Length: 299
Ligand SMILES: [Zn+2]
Ligand SMILES: [Zn+2]
Image 1 (cartoon, protein in one colour):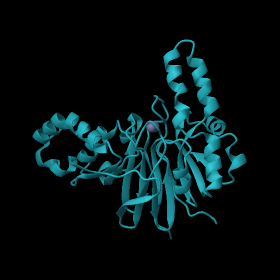
Image 2 (tube, rainbow, N blue to C red):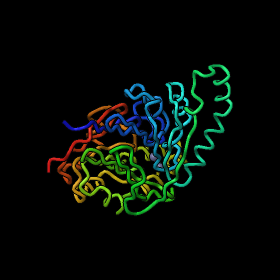
Image 3 (tube, rainbow, N blue to C red):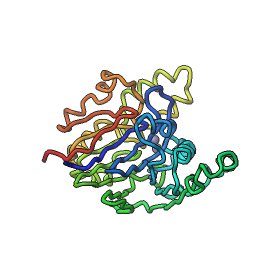
Image 4 (cartoon, rainbow, N blue to C red):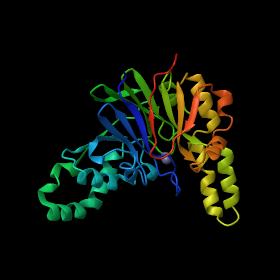
């Protein structure tokens, strides 16, 4: 019987508002260990509906400092505290992570004081503390964290001009999963994905985005122009299929889908159209609050 090793998807959308898909957020579940990876808008609020108690998370990782990956951090810190955390949250992320945490802690400073004044020792003073370790960005995989048998490695991805930006590879119980973070097609992601059991990859559907740009252009030309910049730093669905085939990936799960499609099988199929012509393995799109086990690949 293999150990529990799952990815819980808190948010599978991008920066723009969407009723079905929140900003980026995942929980890597390995046995009894829960590790948060990114915490974009709405992600913290999806923890409890996803069956994860916020106080059960002792460690959080961040891929990069874009708003759709970090703006629910204050809600997460608060929810973690009031659901019973008694130890500081350990945080790992690229350069800029300390500044991000310091800024959110400053914003919460008065709230923390009010709640201690009101609830006293029912809230543990250490439960709202954070300890940050910034990790270097390296092209090849670099181990930075072991929690029991759960190992995390980081690698730098290409999300220029967002520098540094990281992807992560987690290994547990003889299985492995790569979380791409936000990136365009790049060699470091291909190398890190080599023979991995599951690739959790951000995804851009270029024709769908182009349709959105065309419909916005008459009445919102500036917003249309901003969206035209999006493809330069994201990976497209055909590129993901090629990468997965060439790197011998066991299966692919799409997340951070751009543009965000509804929780509708036909829309999801349309988004992934053509990928299975290139890559023979399983390809699916995650939905918010979904829990997907990391399975050992067949061969
Ligand atoms: Zn980004
Ligand atoms: Zn993003």
